[in-house]
Amino acid sequence: MAKEILVGKASEFKEGDKKIVPNGKNSEIGVYLVHGNWYAYANLCPHQGGPACEGLMMAKVEEVIAEDKTFQGMKFNHDEMHIVCPWHGWEFDIANGEAVADRKWSLRKFEVDVRGEDVYVLA
Amino acid sequence: MDLPISDIHKQSVKSLDTSSLLKNAARQRDARKFSSFPIIDVDCHHYENESLSEIVKYIDDPVLKQMGMVYTGGGTGGQTPFNPAGVGYQDVAGRVTRYPLRKTETTPGDDQHRDVHLSLRWMDAMGVDYVCLFPTPMLSLGLHPQPEIEAALAKAYNRWLLENITAKEERIKTMMYVPFSDPDAAYETVKEFGDHPDVIGFMIVSVRYQAVHSNAYMKTYALMEELGKPLGFHSNYNWNDRLVGNSNRFLVTHALGFTVYNAVHLCNWVVNAMPERFPKLKTVWIESGLAWIPWVMQRLDNDYKMRWSEAPSLKGLPSDYMREMFYTSQPMEMPDNLDVLKTTFDLINADDQLLWASDYPHWDMDVPSVIYDLPFLDERQKHKMLGGNAIDLFNLDISPRFPNYKPV
Image 1 (cartoon, one colour):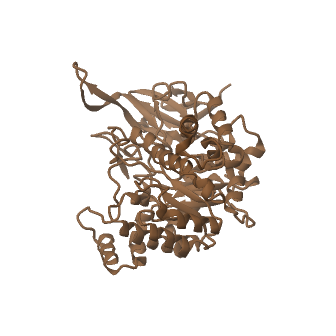
Image 2 (cartoon, rainbow over the protein chains, first blue to last red):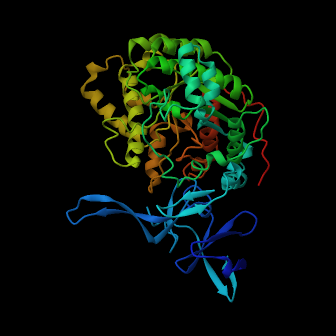
Image 3 (cartoon, one colour):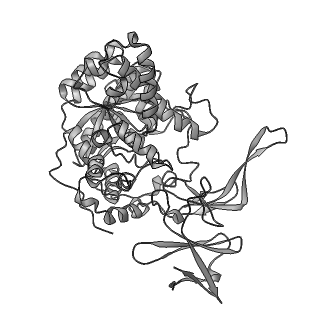
């Protein structure tokens, strides 16, 4: 059975916030509130082991291509937010933890349980 | 401090602490017992531009020295007389946070140089015993339109480095910067610094347009060979290059640039039979990764068999000579099919010729586990690639074993 780790009070989080909590002695879990949804991922990049959750969270970058196929610039798409590992810049889709450049790689995902005011992660 | 994460958003982040950033590297270090064998990092960096005001004091030429003092004092409207590098953003627009946060890291205000403190932090985290330290912006100095500036700054940097960094920390060595744009200055550099105990070899920055087989350099190579220390070619990118810079994305400029310059120099080195002229001079190809080597081997061998008369001094295939050269591993490409990487290892005789390098703190750095975790290597091979091969190549005295870090 998964152990429950108390993350904190739901009211402590505002949209886009994260909190990194210990998961035993040698690992951590990053807990996020993004677009009203709770997510939790291991603070361990599948690339070389960087602390992925300690990096920035950035919106997906998209190219703007016109109907005539010409390049018109780039834009941020805030509907898809990415966890960015600070070691090398690998980006992971917050919605499922998959590496956006190669989706067979992903952050280890954990379930989040909100009971009343308390937020738990099931590790 | 806040870092911009979009055109309208910012994210609050903590000040940089290298030991904290690399705590997962330290966990790898402990889990894999890296303290049980020596690890040598053949290519890592500091940002010598942050110490430029100290370095320019070592310039001999009074006019260039005065210019340097002005530039490092109050600046001259954003221009620099020293750094010819053009645009670039290796940190992926701030995503690799150790770049924008670099200046927020604190170090003790003691007698030890900040660069030593910072180096030891990441060395301890990764479990590295000794390093070969290289500069950063000076990797573009081979493009400077004034050879005399490369010569003057190289000499000043070399003196400063030996007095203020390597002399203060025995775990830090260097391959001396050779100002290749001025053949006489290159020779004088080897002559002046070549027998210094902290100089474990010589380094030519590869991003330049001089031919390595020019007669002007033969006396310098002869002196290096006599000294018994290897010659490294350290690559870089150059977005102003008309060919490899013909991209609107840094990704391409980096992926190709870091390999093409070394590929050209290596090809010229081989077909001009430099290994026959200087059979005891060992060469190291630095920071080009590994994927380019099978490509060059196959191309050279194929053409050589049809055009033997253009490389008549060779006594074997070009790939035979390449197999006796040394290569640093970083940035080690990690193909999905590891058989590809294993084949590359076999082609270059990696057991004896491959040297692990971190390239820390640069954006595409590698931790030691990139070698240690490869499933097709045994323990003996891992130890050689992570340290043993470098110890042999550079004749390193590792009797005072390091590191003295504390387990996590």
